[in-house]
Image (tube, rainbow, N blue to C red; front, side, top):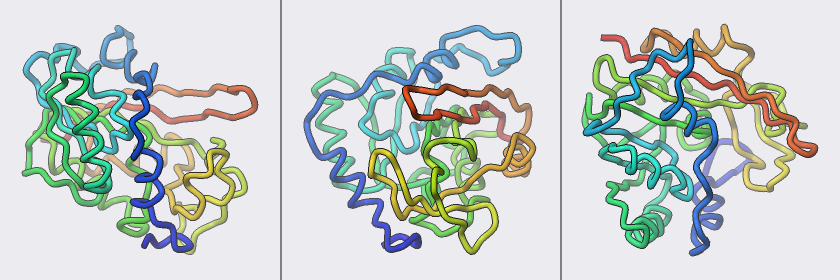
Amino acid sequence: MGVGMGYDSKKAWGELYSGDSPIAYPAEGVIRIFKGTFPALTMPRDHANLSILDMGCGDGRHLPFLSGLGFDVCAVEVSETICSTLRRRMEAYDVKVDIRAGHAGSLPYEDSYFDRLLTWNSCYYMSLSGPRFGAHVAEMARVLKPGGWIVASLPKKTSFIFQDSTVSDTAGYRIIANDYFGMRNGEIMRCIEDRADLVESFEAKFENFCHADLDMEWFGLPYHWHVFCAQRKV
């Protein structure tokens, strides 16, 4: 069980991802980062023969896209049940992916294994490891090669995810109470105060930050996200 009001993340997400419905399209932000050209984005976009981990890959929506860019793709989700479903899905798409069970606080790969790590809407879920976000940052850095890049998104405190959430006993964390999609209620999450807090949370292991913001009012839901790329310190 998780630490937030008895939340069981493996059960909650296992029920969502257990079906055989088609995968979602890749997130627009991920497409823009890996294929676009922007003045403040310094991460190299030559992806051929590089390795990448999609950490918290969900239904696998980014895996065919990343494979098509030339990456050697690996992926992590929270339970073996979800991973088994993902493997069948990727076989149907004829996409070669190494998929393993794990989470941001415990990644089943060796030190300095990857050139890139994608954590899109995933690294701030804390129920499997407790309110120790610094341990998540350290673990993600551990599996990246020195000089490798992280690509990340985290919800702003104004995001719909935090609506009616309750303050955790640990500063900087909130317990989800009114998730519109009904998947996260009871989950404890890292709640980033602002961009300065974001950098402070990652700068022990990362440098050369490239920042973006997603601030959309999407038919009644405030989709407000911090987005950044940063390089693992050598």
